Image 1: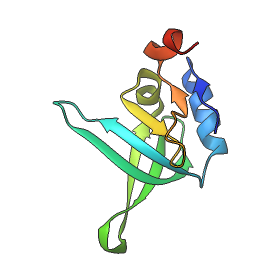
Image 2 (image 1 turned 90 degrees about the vertical axis):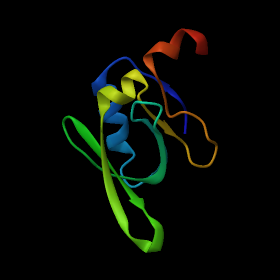
Image 3 (image 1 turned 45 degrees about the vertical axis):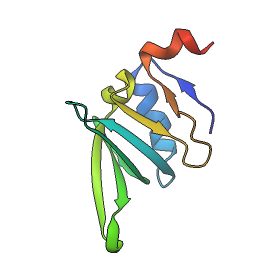
Image 4 (image 1 turned 135 degrees about the vertical axis):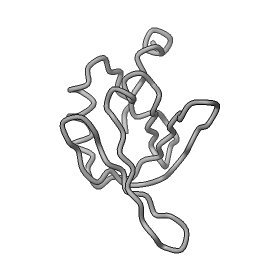
Length: 98
């Protein structure tokens, strides 16, 4: 997967819409130094949020929803599960990348 610099929520929504069914690693900053990392597949995309289905211990699945705005600001980061590379460059990091 190529990393994509983004500055519009619509671009994130469109790219994730093309990735439905693909596996991603999600790193979400939940505040107060709490960071959650999960591996799952993009299940659905909606106008304001996208859903990642995660396989938990003992074979149970859970669904986590995230806002596109959080991907834009870097609060939620998405990574390619194989290479570990960012799928999107958060807004604040774009000038450093190139």
